[in-house]
Image 1 (cartoon, rainbow over the protein chains, first blue to last red):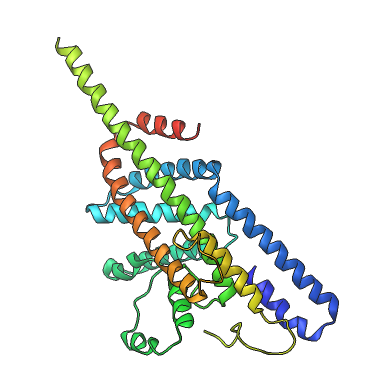
Image 2 (image 1 turned 135 degrees about the horizontal axis):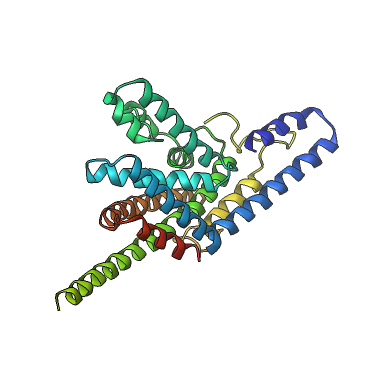
Length: 210
Length: 93
């Protein structure tokens, strides 16, 4: 997607008008797609599909391994949620592809080497920053610095040009909002479910005893 | 960042235009809860980027908190598979 536009950028230099028109067409197609994506992320249907896939994936991952500590379990839930979110994006965006490919790289690392490297593996798609570069950053103009920070926050978008980064960020935000909505709804539901289940157990105990 | 920044005033016009950038920035502004109701000519691009970063960080934090909550809830909910089936069927109604 993004690379297609950059290819056209270069060719537009040399070729006459017709190529330019094609460039605009590709841009509007992308904009329409972006609009459609925005609508999708905000739809209830998409949220429900995500929720059910999430529940299934969570069950599956809990059956496979039962991690010992609370933080590892929580981390596993977050990673599952991110993975399902990336899949829901259907490969249309860079951030979603980056999430899935970094996970694959993680798995290969874990198979080959011992868990000594667990720190980098657990970090997922964020990398440690060099403090020397941090000092240098303050001299950059505000826009450039903020662009860099944003590039680090959106997965797989560190070296993206500004317009592409803005597009990715817009889509990523809409997707994250849906993720949060779905997870919150699921948590509320489970809370109610648990309360209901324990009530049921209590009352059935009372029935048995009487 | 590379030299392909939008601010380059090269001739040819096939480079990414400022208009395009402004358009994307204003679209992003509409998505941000902090800046949605302000006029776009009063909000600088740098401000939009900053708010975007803050907002994404907030969303990440919310997702982490919810993951904590969910992992606890799933521990206690982990009863029979019948319970999980009920959950799934109720969610897909």
